[in-house]
Length: 270
Image (tube, rainbow, N blue to C red):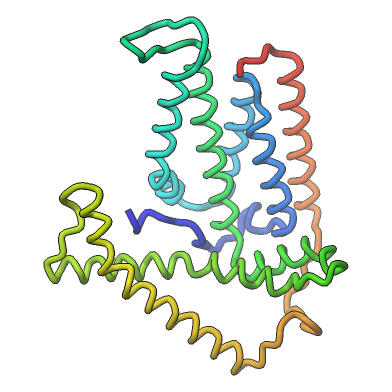
């Protein structure tokens, strides 16, 4: 399961989404997430699902990587869908004891499933197609107005990017430690929940030690390179808006208009 976590991984490429300005990608992702949860009928839901599929195809990232990102949260998706399916109001279509299935429950289960899957795929597309350096620059530029309140924007963006960058590294380290403990005879897959949690203690302790060691090495490396924060720093790569960025923005505006139009013209389901 640890190997299936793809958060923070970056795949180099030269596709349309790779070339899009990271600031545009972050802003449009936030807008698209809001749009996903503003779909109130199947026409609007189908439109956002189609746009999500288009983003996945245009990213140029192997489909199996997106499937891995979904595999991690499939339990949450199924559990949430079942809760909405059996515990929604309305006239029951089928009932067995306290369990009942209603038309409202089916609609809610479908909507919540498609929404969560679209959310995960769109978010994964951002990290798959944007390098940690570009994310840092984009976050710093977007949070630049906060400097008026004497907030250290550069340091915040740096910390967020470092945390995102080291997620794959820590997951790989966790997998190595677990394999080493299993080779020594540790049993982490049998027994009840309490025994499984207790079996993770020999994994967590060396993982914390390794994490603090990596953090110390990173701090030392930054000091050796005379890192003093964001004041007076220059950038090797300056972000500029291009025609493709305006095209992507215009497309998202059209999608937003399409969703709003679907919500107005067609009957509300949820």
